[in-house]
Image (tube, rainbow, N blue to C red; front, side, top):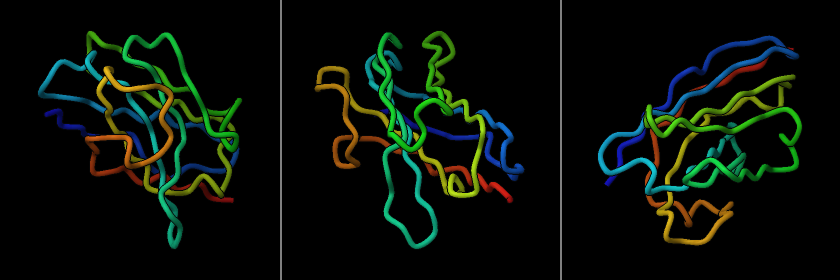
Amino acid sequence: QVQLVESGGGLVQAGGSLRLSCAASGRTFSSYHMGWFRQAPGKEREFVATITWSGGNTYYADSVKGRFTISRDNAKNTVYLHMNSLKPEDTAVYYCAARPRSTGWPASRQYEYDYWGQGTQVTVSS
């Protein structure tokens, strides 16, 4: 198993930036592809971005492409989500998730991920 803990959320004005972190513990971090999802109030959880176990490939939802960047540091067992040009519609709880590297990639559906963090709140004011 792997345990995931997100941090870095907060309140930011529209046009601002935030960097989310997700620290992993347990099994070898590089054994997993990683993803970020988000859930806004009253909406279903949606895919944001994913990165391969090595960090060599990334894939984004159209809604964040060009504004968000996913990265990872396997030496620090951490995956990041750099968010720029934030919009009020980016307001949500952001979750990181892990998927074994033996499985396919990219994966953008919730059920394709085995492990989840508890989430961190991002609020973008207009």
